[in-house]
Image 1 (cartoon, rainbow, N blue to C red):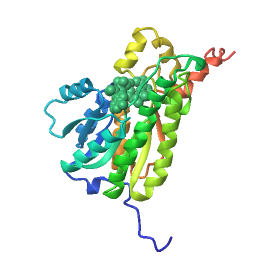
Image 2: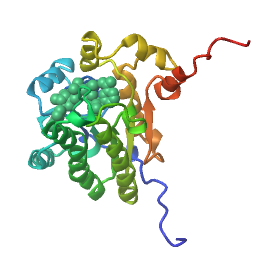
Image 3: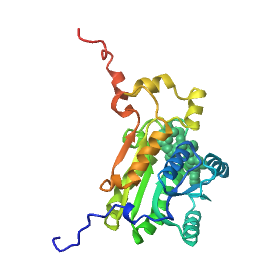
Image 4: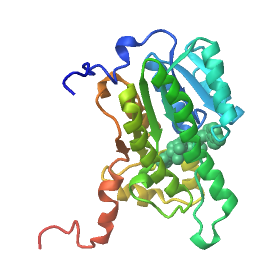
Length: 278
Ligand SMILES: NC(=O)c1ccc[n+]([C@@H]2O[C@H](COP(=O)([O-])OP(=O)(O)OC[C@H]3O[C@@H](n4cnc5c(N)ncnc54)[C@H](O)[C@@H]3O)[C@@H](O)[C@H]2O)c1
Protein backbone atom coordinates (compact mmCIF):
# COMPACT_ATOMS: atom_id res chain seq x y z
CA UNK A 1 0.00 0.00 0.00
CA UNK A 2 2.80 2.41 0.93
CA UNK A 3 4.13 2.36 -2.65
CA UNK A 4 0.79 3.24 -4.23
CA UNK A 5 0.44 6.73 -5.71
CA UNK A 6 -1.63 9.16 -3.69
CA UNK A 7 -5.28 9.10 -4.72
CA UNK A 8 -6.35 12.16 -2.78
CA UNK A 9 -7.76 13.83 -5.87
CA UNK A 10 -9.88 10.84 -6.90
CA UNK A 11 -13.57 11.72 -6.94
CA UNK A 12 -12.95 15.41 -7.70
CA UNK A 13 -14.28 16.45 -11.08
CA UNK A 14 -13.99 20.21 -10.79
CA UNK A 15 -10.28 20.66 -11.39
CA UNK A 16 -10.55 18.68 -14.62
CA UNK A 17 -13.96 20.00 -15.69
CA UNK A 18 -14.02 21.69 -19.07
CA UNK A 19 -16.59 23.20 -21.38
CA UNK A 20 -18.38 20.26 -22.92
CA UNK A 21 -18.38 18.14 -19.77
CA UNK A 22 -21.92 16.97 -19.40
CA UNK A 23 -24.34 15.35 -16.99
CA UNK A 24 -26.88 12.94 -18.48
CA UNK A 25 -30.30 13.08 -16.78
CA UNK A 26 -32.80 10.28 -17.50
CA UNK A 27 -36.53 10.84 -17.04
CA UNK A 28 -35.77 14.54 -17.44
CA UNK A 29 -39.29 15.49 -18.54
CA UNK A 30 -40.96 14.48 -15.25
CA UNK A 31 -41.50 16.60 -12.16
CA UNK A 32 -38.24 15.75 -10.38
CA UNK A 33 -36.20 15.43 -13.60
CA UNK A 34 -37.18 18.91 -14.77
CA UNK A 35 -36.09 20.47 -11.46
CA UNK A 36 -32.75 18.63 -11.63
CA UNK A 37 -32.10 19.81 -15.21
CA UNK A 38 -32.78 23.43 -14.23
CA UNK A 39 -30.55 23.20 -11.17
CA UNK A 40 -27.60 21.59 -13.00
CA UNK A 41 -27.75 24.16 -15.82
CA UNK A 42 -27.60 26.83 -13.10
CA UNK A 43 -24.56 25.06 -11.64
CA UNK A 44 -22.79 25.48 -15.00
CA UNK A 45 -22.99 21.93 -16.31
CA UNK A 46 -23.81 21.03 -19.88
CA UNK A 47 -26.94 18.92 -19.41
CA UNK A 48 -28.16 16.10 -21.64
CA UNK A 49 -31.86 15.84 -20.83
CA UNK A 50 -33.23 12.48 -21.93
CA UNK A 51 -36.70 10.94 -21.74
CA UNK A 52 -38.71 8.28 -23.55
CA UNK A 53 -41.63 10.70 -23.70
CA UNK A 54 -41.41 13.32 -26.45
CA UNK A 55 -43.92 15.55 -24.64
CA UNK A 56 -41.63 15.47 -21.60
CA UNK A 57 -38.67 16.59 -23.70
CA UNK A 58 -40.81 19.43 -25.05
CA UNK A 59 -41.59 20.44 -21.46
CA UNK A 60 -37.86 20.65 -20.76
CA UNK A 61 -37.29 22.70 -23.91
CA UNK A 62 -40.01 25.17 -22.91
CA UNK A 63 -38.90 25.37 -19.25
CA UNK A 64 -35.28 26.23 -20.05
CA UNK A 65 -35.70 27.88 -23.45
CA UNK A 66 -32.59 29.48 -24.87
CA UNK A 67 -30.10 27.53 -22.71
CA UNK A 68 -27.13 26.78 -24.94
CA UNK A 69 -25.77 24.14 -22.58
CA UNK A 70 -28.94 22.04 -22.87
CA UNK A 71 -29.02 19.01 -25.15
CA UNK A 72 -32.21 17.03 -25.63
CA UNK A 73 -32.24 13.36 -26.54
CA UNK A 74 -35.04 10.80 -26.83
CA UNK A 75 -33.80 7.78 -24.87
CA UNK A 76 -35.60 4.73 -23.52
CA UNK A 77 -33.64 3.42 -20.53
CA UNK A 78 -35.35 0.04 -20.89
CA UNK A 79 -33.74 -0.47 -24.33
CA UNK A 80 -29.98 -0.98 -24.29
CA UNK A 81 -29.66 0.00 -27.97
CA UNK A 82 -31.35 3.32 -27.23
CA UNK A 83 -28.88 4.04 -24.39
CA UNK A 84 -25.79 3.06 -26.40
CA UNK A 85 -27.01 5.14 -29.37
CA UNK A 86 -27.27 8.20 -27.09
CA UNK A 87 -23.76 7.60 -25.74
CA UNK A 88 -22.40 7.32 -29.30
CA UNK A 89 -24.18 10.53 -30.37
CA UNK A 90 -22.72 12.42 -27.39
CA UNK A 91 -19.23 11.19 -28.25
CA UNK A 92 -19.70 12.29 -31.87
CA UNK A 93 -20.80 15.74 -30.63
CA UNK A 94 -17.64 16.04 -28.50
CA UNK A 95 -19.47 15.93 -25.17
CA UNK A 96 -17.64 14.18 -22.33
CA UNK A 97 -19.96 12.54 -19.85
CA UNK A 98 -18.86 13.39 -16.30
CA UNK A 99 -22.15 12.76 -14.53
CA UNK A 100 -25.31 10.66 -14.68
CA UNK A 101 -28.57 11.09 -12.78
CA UNK A 102 -30.89 8.08 -13.00
CA UNK A 103 -34.32 9.64 -12.50
CA UNK A 104 -36.48 7.65 -14.95
CA UNK A 105 -39.06 5.69 -13.01
CA UNK A 106 -42.55 4.26 -13.14
CA UNK A 107 -44.79 4.69 -10.12
CA UNK A 108 -47.70 2.32 -9.43
CA UNK A 109 -51.17 2.20 -7.94
CA UNK A 110 -51.68 0.09 -4.82
CA UNK A 111 -52.86 -3.50 -5.40
CA UNK A 112 -52.75 -6.67 -3.30
CA UNK A 113 -49.82 -9.04 -3.69
CA UNK A 114 -52.02 -11.88 -5.02
CA UNK A 115 -53.39 -9.77 -7.87
CA UNK A 116 -50.00 -8.47 -8.95
CA UNK A 117 -49.81 -8.37 -12.72
CA UNK A 118 -46.64 -9.99 -14.15
CA UNK A 119 -46.47 -7.71 -17.17
CA UNK A 120 -46.82 -4.51 -15.14
CA UNK A 121 -44.34 -5.75 -12.55
CA UNK A 122 -41.69 -6.51 -15.20
CA UNK A 123 -42.29 -3.15 -16.89
CA UNK A 124 -41.58 -1.38 -13.59
CA UNK A 125 -38.41 -3.44 -13.01
CA UNK A 126 -37.27 -2.81 -16.61
CA UNK A 127 -37.34 0.95 -16.08
CA UNK A 128 -36.63 1.50 -12.36
CA UNK A 129 -33.89 -1.09 -11.91
CA UNK A 130 -32.60 -2.52 -15.19
CA UNK A 131 -32.76 0.93 -16.83
CA UNK A 132 -30.44 2.28 -14.13
CA UNK A 133 -28.15 -0.75 -14.49
CA UNK A 134 -27.86 -0.21 -18.25
CA UNK A 135 -27.20 3.53 -17.92
CA UNK A 136 -24.62 2.88 -15.17
CA UNK A 137 -22.85 0.37 -17.41
CA UNK A 138 -22.90 2.51 -20.54
CA UNK A 139 -22.21 6.00 -19.11
CA UNK A 140 -20.26 4.74 -16.08
CA UNK A 141 -17.78 3.01 -18.37
CA UNK A 142 -17.32 6.28 -20.29
CA UNK A 143 -16.48 8.02 -17.00
CA UNK A 144 -14.28 5.17 -15.77
CA UNK A 145 -12.26 5.25 -19.02
CA UNK A 146 -11.94 9.03 -18.92
CA UNK A 147 -11.81 11.64 -16.20
CA UNK A 148 -13.94 9.94 -13.59
CA UNK A 149 -17.25 11.37 -12.53
CA UNK A 150 -20.30 10.95 -10.34
CA UNK A 151 -23.59 9.05 -10.58
CA UNK A 152 -26.73 9.79 -8.58
CA UNK A 153 -29.61 7.31 -8.44
CA UNK A 154 -33.05 8.60 -7.48
CA UNK A 155 -34.46 5.90 -5.22
CA UNK A 156 -37.26 6.62 -2.74
CA UNK A 157 -38.10 6.35 0.94
CA UNK A 158 -39.24 2.88 -0.25
CA UNK A 159 -35.55 1.97 -0.47
CA UNK A 160 -35.26 2.41 3.30
CA UNK A 161 -38.79 1.47 4.40
CA UNK A 162 -40.83 -0.46 1.79
CA UNK A 163 -44.42 0.80 1.57
CA UNK A 164 -47.34 -1.30 0.23
CA UNK A 165 -46.33 -0.84 -3.41
CA UNK A 166 -45.45 -4.46 -4.19
CA UNK A 167 -43.84 -3.90 -7.57
CA UNK A 168 -42.33 -0.43 -7.06
CA UNK A 169 -40.83 -0.77 -3.56
CA UNK A 170 -38.55 -3.77 -4.32
CA UNK A 171 -37.15 -1.97 -7.38
CA UNK A 172 -36.06 0.90 -5.15
CA UNK A 173 -34.50 -1.44 -2.56
CA UNK A 174 -32.56 -3.04 -5.42
CA UNK A 175 -31.52 0.36 -6.78
CA UNK A 176 -30.12 1.16 -3.33
CA UNK A 177 -28.08 -2.05 -3.47
CA UNK A 178 -26.89 -1.19 -6.98
CA UNK A 179 -25.74 2.18 -5.60
CA UNK A 180 -23.53 0.52 -3.00
CA UNK A 181 -22.22 -2.19 -5.35
CA UNK A 182 -21.37 0.19 -8.19
CA UNK A 183 -19.75 2.62 -5.72
CA UNK A 184 -17.47 -0.20 -4.62
CA UNK A 185 -16.56 -1.22 -8.14
CA UNK A 186 -16.21 2.22 -9.71
CA UNK A 187 -14.54 3.96 -6.75
CA UNK A 188 -11.01 2.93 -7.79
CA UNK A 189 -11.76 4.34 -11.27
CA UNK A 190 -12.63 7.78 -9.87
CA UNK A 191 -16.39 7.45 -10.17
CA UNK A 192 -18.57 8.14 -7.12
CA UNK A 193 -22.07 6.64 -6.90
CA UNK A 194 -24.73 7.83 -4.46
CA UNK A 195 -28.50 7.92 -4.15
CA UNK A 196 -31.11 10.46 -3.19
CA UNK A 197 -34.20 8.92 -1.57
CA UNK A 198 -37.11 11.33 -1.97
CA UNK A 199 -40.11 11.30 0.32
CA UNK A 200 -43.57 12.39 -0.86
CA UNK A 201 -42.66 15.09 -3.36
CA UNK A 202 -44.96 17.63 -4.99
CA UNK A 203 -44.69 16.54 -8.62
CA UNK A 204 -47.64 16.55 -11.04
CA UNK A 205 -48.01 12.77 -10.62
CA UNK A 206 -48.14 13.07 -6.79
CA UNK A 207 -50.50 16.05 -7.00
CA UNK A 208 -52.75 13.88 -9.17
CA UNK A 209 -52.74 11.10 -6.55
CA UNK A 210 -53.70 13.66 -3.90
CA UNK A 211 -56.43 15.19 -6.08
CA UNK A 212 -57.96 11.77 -6.81
CA UNK A 213 -57.92 10.75 -3.14
CA UNK A 214 -55.21 8.05 -3.47
CA UNK A 215 -53.01 9.90 -0.99
CA UNK A 216 -54.27 11.99 1.92
CA UNK A 217 -52.20 15.15 2.10
CA UNK A 218 -53.22 15.84 5.72
CA UNK A 219 -51.91 12.44 6.83
CA UNK A 220 -48.75 12.77 4.72
CA UNK A 221 -48.00 16.12 6.33
CA UNK A 222 -48.85 14.96 9.85
CA UNK A 223 -46.47 11.98 9.55
CA UNK A 224 -43.45 14.05 8.50
CA UNK A 225 -41.34 15.69 11.20
CA UNK A 226 -41.44 18.97 9.30
CA UNK A 227 -45.21 18.80 8.75
CA UNK A 228 -45.00 19.11 4.98
CA UNK A 229 -44.22 17.45 1.68
CA UNK A 230 -40.99 17.93 -0.31
CA UNK A 231 -40.51 20.42 -3.17
CA UNK A 232 -38.77 19.18 -6.34
CA UNK A 233 -36.05 21.84 -5.98
CA UNK A 234 -35.10 20.31 -2.62
CA UNK A 235 -34.32 17.01 -4.37
CA UNK A 236 -32.38 18.85 -7.07
CA UNK A 237 -30.18 20.70 -4.57
CA UNK A 238 -28.99 17.45 -2.96
CA UNK A 239 -28.32 15.95 -6.42
CA UNK A 240 -26.31 19.09 -7.21
CA UNK A 241 -24.26 18.59 -4.02
CA UNK A 242 -23.59 14.91 -4.74
CA UNK A 243 -22.36 15.72 -8.27
CA UNK A 244 -20.12 18.49 -7.01
CA UNK A 245 -16.64 18.42 -5.52
CA UNK A 246 -18.21 19.38 -2.17
CA UNK A 247 -19.06 15.67 -2.01
CA UNK A 248 -15.65 14.52 -3.27
CA UNK A 249 -15.26 11.84 -0.57
CA UNK A 250 -18.92 10.79 -0.46
CA UNK A 251 -19.77 7.52 -2.18
CA UNK A 252 -22.06 4.53 -1.65
CA UNK A 253 -24.66 6.37 0.44
CA UNK A 254 -28.38 7.13 0.14
CA UNK A 255 -29.55 10.48 1.44
CA UNK A 256 -33.25 10.71 2.32
CA UNK A 257 -34.85 14.02 1.35
CA UNK A 258 -38.23 13.50 2.99
CA UNK A 259 -38.99 16.40 5.35
CA UNK A 260 -38.43 13.91 8.18
CA UNK A 261 -41.06 11.34 7.12
CA UNK A 262 -38.75 8.40 7.90
CA UNK A 263 -37.97 9.91 11.29
CA UNK A 264 -41.53 10.22 12.56
CA UNK A 265 -44.08 8.40 10.38
CA UNK A 266 -44.19 5.47 12.84
CA UNK A 267 -44.80 7.74 15.84
CA UNK A 268 -48.55 7.45 15.16
CA UNK A 269 -48.37 4.11 17.03
CA UNK A 270 -47.85 6.02 20.29
CA UNK A 271 -51.28 7.40 21.10
CA UNK A 272 -50.09 9.03 24.31
CA UNK A 273 -47.42 11.00 22.45
CA UNK A 274 -47.84 14.73 22.63
CA UNK A 275 -50.11 14.72 25.69
CA UNK A 276 -47.41 16.25 27.81
CA UNK A 277 -46.31 15.28 31.34
CA UNK A 278 -49.01 13.61 33.43
N1 LIG B 1 -42.86 12.09 -6.75
C1 LIG B 1 -42.53 11.48 -5.63
O1 LIG B 1 -43.14 11.71 -4.57
C2 LIG B 1 -41.37 10.52 -5.62
C3 LIG B 1 -41.00 9.99 -4.38
C4 LIG B 1 -39.92 9.11 -4.33
C5 LIG B 1 -39.23 8.78 -5.48
N2 LIG B 1 -39.63 9.31 -6.67
C6 LIG B 1 -38.86 8.90 -7.84
O2 LIG B 1 -38.41 10.04 -8.55
C7 LIG B 1 -38.34 9.75 -9.94
C8 LIG B 1 -39.15 10.80 -10.71
O3 LIG B 1 -40.48 10.80 -10.22
P1 LIG B 1 -41.54 11.91 -10.67
O4 LIG B 1 -42.48 12.08 -9.53
O5 LIG B 1 -40.84 13.09 -11.23
O6 LIG B 1 -42.33 11.09 -11.78
P2 LIG B 1 -42.65 11.46 -13.31
O7 LIG B 1 -43.58 10.41 -13.79
O8 LIG B 1 -43.09 12.87 -13.39
O9 LIG B 1 -41.22 11.32 -14.02
C9 LIG B 1 -40.71 10.12 -14.47
C10 LIG B 1 -40.13 10.34 -15.84
O10 LIG B 1 -39.51 9.11 -16.26
C11 LIG B 1 -39.80 8.95 -17.64
N3 LIG B 1 -39.71 7.56 -18.05
C12 LIG B 1 -40.58 6.54 -17.81
N4 LIG B 1 -40.18 5.42 -18.42
C13 LIG B 1 -39.02 5.72 -19.06
C14 LIG B 1 -38.14 4.99 -19.89
N5 LIG B 1 -38.38 3.70 -20.19
N6 LIG B 1 -37.03 5.61 -20.38
C15 LIG B 1 -36.81 6.92 -20.10
N7 LIG B 1 -37.62 7.68 -19.35
C16 LIG B 1 -38.72 7.07 -18.84
C17 LIG B 1 -41.23 9.49 -17.80
O11 LIG B 1 -41.53 9.79 -19.16
C18 LIG B 1 -41.19 10.70 -16.89
O12 LIG B 1 -40.80 11.87 -17.59
C19 LIG B 1 -38.85 8.32 -10.11
O13 LIG B 1 -37.77 7.44 -10.18
C20 LIG B 1 -39.65 8.09 -8.84
O14 LIG B 1 -39.68 6.73 -8.49
C21 LIG B 1 -40.68 10.17 -6.77
